[in-house]
Amino acid sequence: MQQQVKVVAVLAANAALTSILAATLTAHRGLRVRPFESPAGLFAYMRLAPVDLLVTDFDCATAPAPELAQMLLRDPLLGVQSYDVIALASDVTARTRQLATDSGIDEVMLKPMSPRYLLERVLARLAAHDTPADMASGPLARRAAMMASYAARGDNVVPLFPA
Image 1 (tube, rainbow, N blue to C red):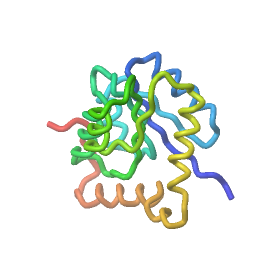
Image 2 (image 1 turned 120 degrees about the vertical axis):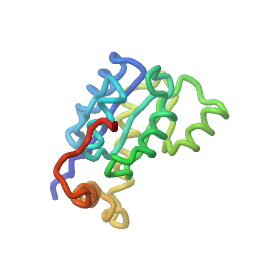
Image 3 (image 1 turned 90 degrees about the vertical axis):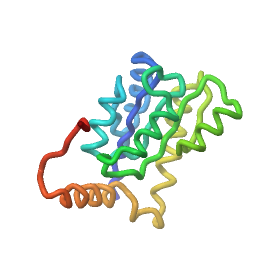
């Protein structure tokens, strides 16, 4: 049986960290990694193609992880909402935990961490969705749901940036 390729989006605190994390994740054959330098690029991509997992950062100046997760959840143009979120944090406090819980972040990883450890956590989180009970919400079902939601609009124009 052929392994299904999973899409991982990465938006970290700075371009260098995003690049390092993306390079580490790209080394795994079963992952298609999409690094982003801005939330606008991430939103545009996620409006067009589903992702299986998002790696983001509490220390990102343009869109801290909780804020980004909330914006994605509230985005009416985002066709698919079934993806996991791993957030990186410099320190984990009670407030960090509460923000993560309130914004729908699935896992918080303490920085600095080994990029290999991130790969391990990404693979573990993605593997949790490959169980038979979860197959109905897998990438193919999500893609079909996304296409159905676009078909309901009645045209073939997908606005990337809301007016």
